[in-house]
Image 1 (cartoon, rainbow, N blue to C red):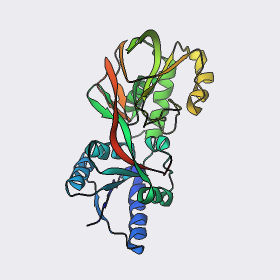
Image 2: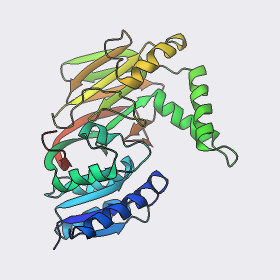
Image 3: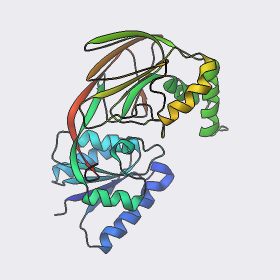
Image 4: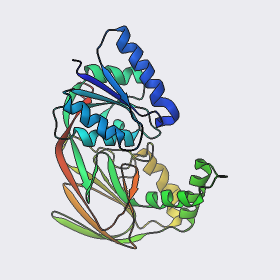
Length: 295
């Protein structure tokens, strides 16, 4: 039996995953690499397919999709001997940035086939499992506002722009009490992000230097920001150069609790869920993932 099982999400990246699967299948067939495969058909199906692959004895589960697809598969592979391999095919592809997996299909496939399995951390936000970044604040407000502006006459980009402008005009800072082992603070929070990975929102380097293999969460608290500060802070925030700003607290921990007023929903690997108060905690070495050798 083959050790390799492929799962692809046909809606990921507006069809990018389907295209990637065709290229991967052709490559494997040409080189006589045995594999089995399945296409996800509905939300939650990737998790079921990955669990079935583990049950059948496959040792490498190669997923083609975005961060949501990867998260589903990772949930099923936690605490098993099977390893997750990724070919990024979504719109954001944020987790792979911290794993040093390239966006090019052939290069990512080479890592999937010849990379090394490493024990990666996972994390929890309340009872929700995540692998990249979770948090609350301005980014969640924008996504919630975007949903309000979506109509059959307004595409996603226009709705997002309207949501962003609305949130900038009515900047919402939350009075937040943050506690962690050995420390506490109170801040007027614009964004609180707790990262196992480094990027969110399709490339924003919110927790630079975070290492998914070190057993620690990287915490970024952006606070005390007036509307006049936004033009100077946002470019730094996008590039990961915001650390050291007087409006930023940045530290590492294994657990953190945040209570804020007004309450906020939380973002967990790109999914908006019921929120605060919220406790984040690390789950060390929870998942085997295929990464470049010596990454």
